[in-house]
Image 1 (cartoon, protein in one colour):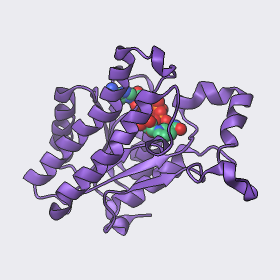
Image 2 (cartoon, rainbow, N blue to C red):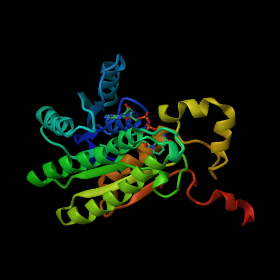
Image 3 (cartoon, rainbow, N blue to C red):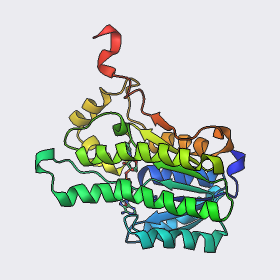
Image 4 (tube, protein in one colour):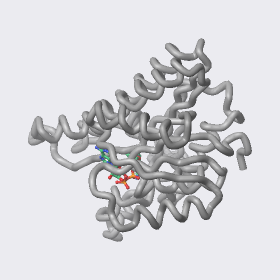
Length: 262
Ligand code: NAI
């Protein structure tokens, strides 16, 4: 447990599913005040999730916002402050991907992925930092990157470009605002068992192919990423900024060189 997170106000984008939801559950266990963000429809499960977070020990509200829309991101911060009085932690988690050979990738698909995964994260960073500066808050930002800020990924050029962008955006903002004690870090998950991968992992052959890329031999669970997020948000990591903490079972360690190969 990270007791300094008790009462802290955290916005987590795209947090009704997958890694974002697991982060919300973990922050609620740490007794934080959690803002669940969803893109459009509330969905039947939202009230259930908010109640679950309160039962876990936190407080929670839901805020609709499309992270690609500047006005939505601004409003999300305003609604957060109106309800909880402040903002301490912003987790840019919302992200999308789709598989297309690069020579067939439409400009529309390219723009969709870049505007969600990179521009959306920039808007979250900018609004959070602006709030932190105006209110003298030593705030904390965590950007959900990917192992694909390191590993090239054919058929996913827009995704890899967006995560590569997140890496240098994270480092640049970390350097720019370090004098104000605002920390900006990223997490680089490997293959995690979430809806983004549901179709792929439902196919045993494709799942086994992915497992072969992971020296630890298994696909991660969203809770294993949430553990990293609470550490990065807590004062236990207070000297860490501009870092992407990779949590990938060893996927970025060149697994094809295992057992003396190469
Ligand atoms: P997910 O599909 O469950 O979560 C993504 C969430 O973002 C969804 O709730 C979706 O509705 C939301 N979202 C998408 N566009 C949005 C928008 N414009 N505005 C607001 N919300 C929006 O998938 P997962 O795996 O939980 O993904 C979370 C993050 O983790 C993403 O940034 C993804 O790139 C990253 N990641 C995931 C990995 C994995 O293997 N699952 C590996 C590496 C990174």
